[in-house]
Image (tube, rainbow over all chains, first blue to last red; front, side):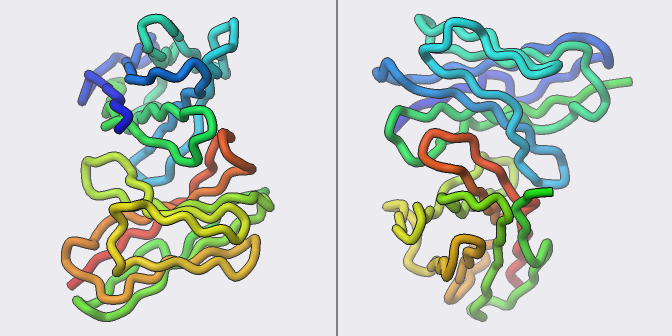
Length: 114
Length: 112
């Protein structure tokens, strides 16, 4: 089974600071994708950002960016200028080429303090 | 706005009483998924449809069934809910394999 590691079960950050959420994964595939999702307390999973393993540039989407290090098999999510509304669970999910399902990591609970 | 809708948002059922959860989408996506998420855990895939092609996860209990009568709708049937089936049930859609998934707001199921 694919192993996904999010080493930070919980993080507390001051508003307006940047925060990095870690994700490492175990795959022998050369071609794959990496998704990050946000889950607020309401329960809905919100797609944030995607990185393809062959993308030359790190993915960026507004205040979200990925620090993708293919050799280390890590794709850390960076949130710049954090806001109170960023408080949520964050899940990373690699997707192997040809696979039809996402497997989620255990998640990191991020709390933004005012 | 195109979206994924789940009804009801909260469902209470009795032990052993069949229950059906509903999901609909206006995205016209080919793939629809059902996930189970228990407290403080990651979502766990139960099954998915690629068009009409049903794909069951190996560890999904037989108690869980699904129907997809058309592109827009997908149902999760729990034939005899047990206390251990109390969870959040998330429906998601995607345009195809390898594409991002869009989730509905979830149905929180309570079993009494």
